[in-house]
Structure formats: structure tokens, C-alpha cells
Image (cartoon, rainbow, N blue to C red; front, side):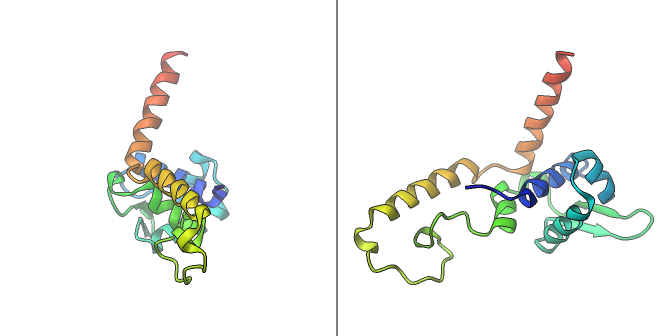
Length: 148
């Protein structure tokens, strides 16, 4: 599965807001500059994140964006699904699919393969939160600073 740039930028933007969680609003141009996200692209991403309830925005002199939830409460899976939709490789394993079951479902070995892939992918990201990514990022920065 290949994720879009929009999803990657959304996670980066959330990470920037997560680093500054509880410290007030952050201007979108600051997020764009710090995380090297095209500013025009970032505005649409922040709008999607706001509509999904992950980000709050405020206009005015002290305005900007901030997380609407604690970083520990934002799952990577949730963010990916906002921009990519279901992560299921096929409709027959998508729990949200409205498609009728196919005519060979009872004996389909391919469905079993798709289900195994889907289960493995979900297991790897199901419990990963924005906070987990922030902790990993801080540890990487500390290691990089140590070797300078």
C-alpha cells in the first residue's frame, strides 16, 4: 500500500502541533516552514484535520492551529483513514464495505490472503499514536545531537 503525500504531510503537521501541544496556537506558515510542507497544500490538510475533529483553528492576532485532542489520543490509523479511506486491500475484507459478498467468497483463498495482509497491517499501526511518533522523534534528535 502506498500512502499519498497528503497523508504524510498530515502526520508531519500533527507532529508539529503535538510538539507544541498545550502551548497555544501555531501559525500554518510556521508548520509549513518547520516541517517543509508546501503552504498551499497544508491549508487543505489542516481543513480536513479540523473537519475530522483532530485540529482546532482560531483566527486573529493570536490565532493559528492546535490539536483538539491530546497526542496520546490520536491514532495513526485514524489519520491515515481520513486521507486514504479504508486500509482494506479488497472490499471483501473491508468491515465498512457496502458491497455484496462475491459469489466465490465461501471458497476463496485470495480473500484469506487479503484478510491476513489487512490484519497484519492493522496490528502494526492499530495502537500507534501521535505521542508514540513524538517520543521516537525526540529520541532520534537526542541521539543525533549526542554524536555531533
